[in-house]
Image (tube, rainbow, N blue to C red; front, side, top):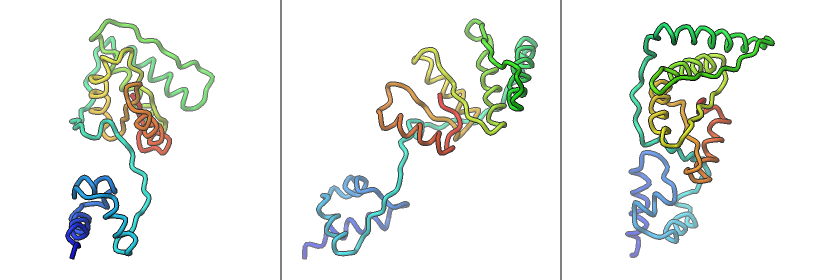
Length: 179
């Protein structure tokens, strides 16, 4: 008698693909935390701590792409940038700072993506700074299509918790590029 709510919780847990959170159980069964607590107190279920990262890009699908052929002008720039990054890998004193200047659509982003690729090949991580928030969506798409499962987003419109999770994922090596 009175066991229906508890049975709903147990069935929900059993039918879940992964161990559900308390919030997922409450949302999925429309029951109260007190019902879950009783099952815990009776030894029928057990709580476990696990870290769950918030990922602002988790609900988006990105179709992987390959690098396009460079134009002659891009190739000339890339040769210089490539050599600078390569020299930096071996800790030579050669300066490796570059400023790319060009109009919108001139191909700067492709140089940035190749530079990121080379830096990742050296076992390092990369930041891709976007000059204005309006460009974030298209930049994230381009970077994530080139580097699937390696990109995280960080900006002031994210919650404090999402920003924290992004940093923790980067520190752990789960993501290698932050836009």
